[in-house]
Every structure is written in structure tokens, then in C-alpha cells.
Image (cartoon, rainbow, N blue to C red):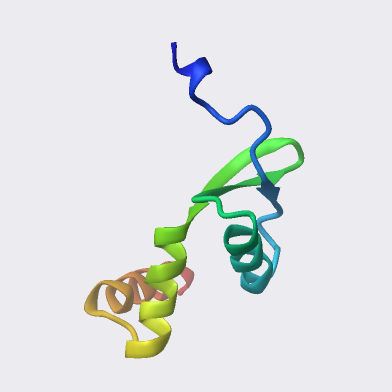
Length: 78
């Protein structure tokens, strides 16, 4: 069973935590993912790859995919 391989007490972070806090935890604890927990419920998983994607976007500007996503979010608000 996977229980033999899984992490028993994974690191958690609030979904409102600053990106810098998440990056610091991922780097200093040498882990690949953080669980985003709010009111005792899992609301997301943040991975090192997610952070690399954010860094890539910050360094190179938004991609067509993120621009399209932003446009969809904007049109839903209107």
C-alpha cells in the first residue's frame, strides 16, 4: 500500500501565505510540495514546478495561456 511510502506529516501552508514563505519552506526543508490548507480542509497543492512556472512568468512576461486565462477571469467579472 502507498501508506508505506507517503509522507505522514506533510508541511502545510495557508492559501493566503506569501509566495516568499512557500519558496522558503520548499527550499529550506528540501521538499517538493506543500499542502494549502484552510479551515482544516485541503484547498490545493503547491509544487516546486508551480514555483518555477511563476518564476518563468515573472522573468519572461505572461504567456498566451496566462493571458487567455486572465481574459476569461475578467469577462466573468463583467
